Length: 192
Image 1 (cartoon, rainbow, N blue to C red):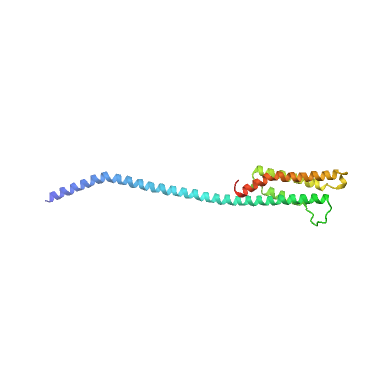
Image 2: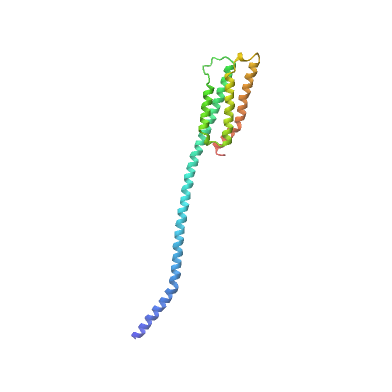
């Protein structure tokens, strides 16, 4: 009877050995695939989180640059209108004597405008900057003409004609500024 138990035990061991010989590699392979998949998922998750972090950083950076651009555009717009108002007042004062105590310092206002424009050039696209700078140059030329606009430099009606010519140049600047102002509004509203 002991021999029968021994043979039975040997048969059970052989049966278990053959089952484990066939099933164990499949189990190990499946376990390896699961582990590899888990590692792949962890790696992909790390990459996704890294991309998200870069995206968020760039988004914050973009928003701060965009806000600065809007601030610069708003300030340029304000300074441009100050220049035009200064030129118009200066022109009016050259043509009509006035008791108005406000005498604009058009040259100082233009220099302030130019300084601001040049310091903040990086926030403007090149064509936009060029357009604004060209208008600045035209306004500078008008200031020079206004400085020399004195009645004794002209004979008769030529003074009035020169005054009208300068007024027309100021009006032309307004028309040239309209597309720039439209582009400013598009940028500020986010349509850029």
